[in-house]
Amino acid sequence: MLDATDTRLLAALQKNAHLTAHQLGELLNLSPSQAGRRRQRLEAEGYITGYAARLDPTKLGLHVQGFIQVHLSTHGPEQSASFARMVDARPEIISAWTMTGEADYLLHVYCADLSALNALLHEVILPHPAVARVQSQIVMDQLKRDAPLPT
Picture 1 (tube, rainbow, N blue to C red):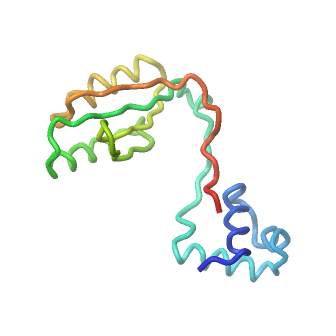
Picture 2: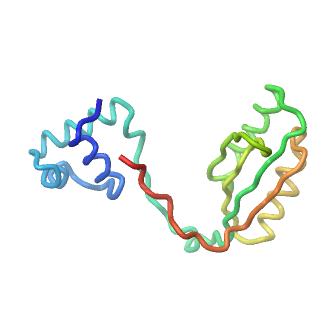
């Protein structure tokens, strides 16, 4: 069970995962050792699943961001597992969801350019035996970056 201090600690770490136990203690009005123990407990209990750096895609040469809706022609366990392996193997696909509604999957992708996106669609995704069709949307501008989870 989370208390108000745990919630504030999680919110602070979502904004800056580099906070030291000393800095967390100051923010939370705790000693550094108390803050450090709380962080360790939240990690051990699975509230904190990892730490990552946010990178600038443009500086990495990834100028096209898009979403691809995938419609499968067959829905058996083998086809789903094969599709999941393909998705996992492609670094351009940064996240993927199974969906309710018309599309079976929604893929979030970053590519260097439109040619690379076209190759991903026509040489990788569409040839997959379980895929019936895709619908892609190219991101023109991102109004809000991935935000911290509400705590």
